Image 1 (tube, helix red, strand yellow):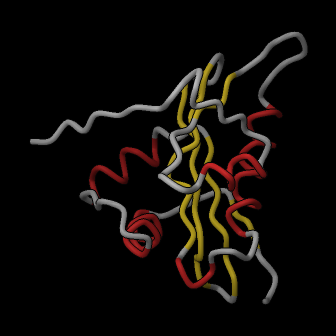
Image 2 (cartoon, helix red, strand yellow; image 1 turned 45 degrees about the vertical axis):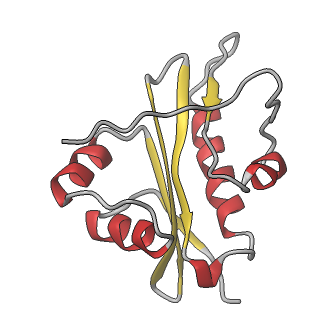
Image 3 (cartoon, rainbow, N blue to C red; image 1 turned 90 degrees about the vertical axis):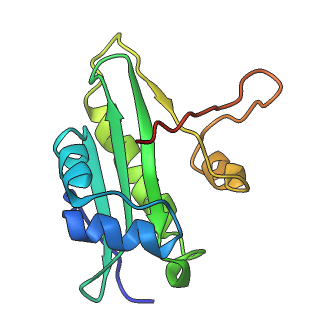
Length: 138
């Protein structure tokens, strides 16, 4: 596999292409533009000038943040790209935490991806806490 380049920006079209490649629900371009504008940190992985993965962090810049939209195109999965994206985002978060402070990174993994996040250092204790969600649709 060729070199993986990480860049700290994602365009609307790149975002939509990658999330659609993994079967995630799609959004309007306007929604994605607003979401990217309000993102704390973002990273895309590029191989041979092709965006093969993305990831974002959303949050309050102080106490809590959430990993979101960690996606790698199916044909590139299992090659360590997702882990590189998560690790870069984690580094960016850590750089913003001052001495004596702490910040919680939350995530809600898609079913079956718990082991991936454990490899990235996240704790998974379903007997103590489980992630939940609610979609608001109009």
